[in-house]
Amino acid sequence: MPERSRAELERALHVVEARLRGRIDLETLFTRAQLLDRLGRSEDARQGYVEVLRRDAAHFGALNGLGTILYKAGLTNDATTVYLAAVSKHPENAIAHANFAYMLLRGGDAARAREHYAIALQLEPGNLEAHRGLALALEALGESDAAQEHRAAGFAAAPLTAIPFRGTGQPVRVLLLVVAGSGNLRADEHLDDRIFATTKLVVEYADRVAELPPHDLLFNAVGDADNSSAALDAAEAVLVRTRAPIVNAPAAVRATGRATNAARLRALPDVVAPRIESVEKSALLAADACVRLEAQGWQLPLLLRSPGFHAGSNFARVDRWDDLATVAQALPGTTLFLIAFVDVREPSGEVCKYRVMSVGGRLYPLHLAIAPQWKVHYFSAQMSERADHRAREACFLSDMRGTLGARATAALERVAETLALDYAGIDFSLDAAGRAVVFEANATMVVPVPDADPRWEYRREPVATIRAAVRRMLLTKANRLDAEPNPSG
Image 1 (tube, helix red, strand yellow):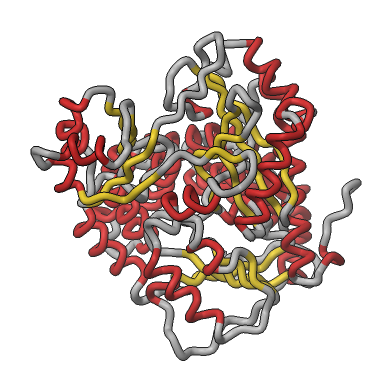
Image 2 (cartoon, rainbow, N blue to C red):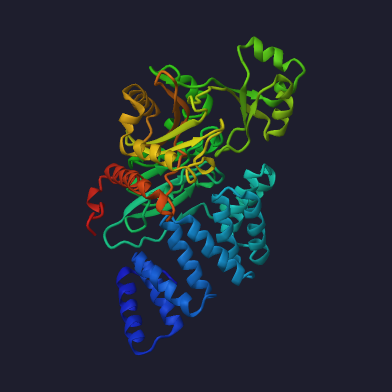
């Protein structure tokens, strides 16, 4: 559907609805759903797409539109199901494969995502989104040279992307700086297109002298300091051409690399930050590696991690010196992080790993993951199976300070102040003394919406609170609190 003003869209909707009062027609129903979607009436549009699919379950436009609405609402499982249906019913459609691949990639299945992106490009070689997504999938799979080829194909000629505004009032114009590869925070979760008119600029491919798009706020979404040094340089080059307020200044992000963070946070009272050093993989493969590490004060067990990866991928534990070379060799990259292991098991043998978000310097509890293994992430923990674990998490979400204690809470507040980021997350555990054992603190952490399972009802309000806090922080930065939605509306 071509770009039209809101008034034109409203007039078109009026005409279409008048036509439907005379006769129900499938394509007219679909046009109505599209118009509602473009006008930002998401729930009405969702129902409209469903109505089309009741009459024709294979209608591609309705499948694609419904999947996108579900994705924007944070219902990723439902969106993935709908996009899969689109692929199954329209295997010749490049857009269907690209959308499904995107959901696979977000879910951590880079191998299957690569397959579907490749199919999309076979069907439509010039599909920019497929090139961009395939670059991310290949990067996750360690195929950096091939990833760079598709990255250039996807971004070199089109580094700017404008997201259509669907609101009714004066939009808050955001210039969103992103990196072409992985390492961005998921800003789309917070930039409601009924409030914000967003233009994405891929900083590595940005014209260094061209005038920037009009904007009220500059949001730096480049969040991975270890994997995006050149992109942060490019982001800083953009800053000299704007006087707009800045969210997550690149200089502050740069200081959140794992090793740098560990060193500076360790100096804070009541913060335990495991020792982290970047080492050449070749040094770990040398015959005298174990002797040298012991001489430097390293003890077993210790952890090895490839830079630039998240969610526990390419992250391994070494329990015997004899296994050091084997574990190191299996990890991708020429440099690795050497990380001291801190045992934070409770007397039960379980590990509790908390996450709080720092928004505008204020802390908000997001989740508690409990698991029997040392490597804990929410998606791999035993939360869905254990009502007692969910009860503990609910206590944390309703009373963060009471759960953590004054000592750890104050320590986390110092961490947030040290980060100096407008938006960040902190992953941590507690030690026996009640101190905060900080594993990671940076801008890349996400605030996912819980799925529809009633077991997660207690998590919905805390997530909504964080998202509202992020929105208000952005509007405050832009001096546009007038754009804050009416809570009753």
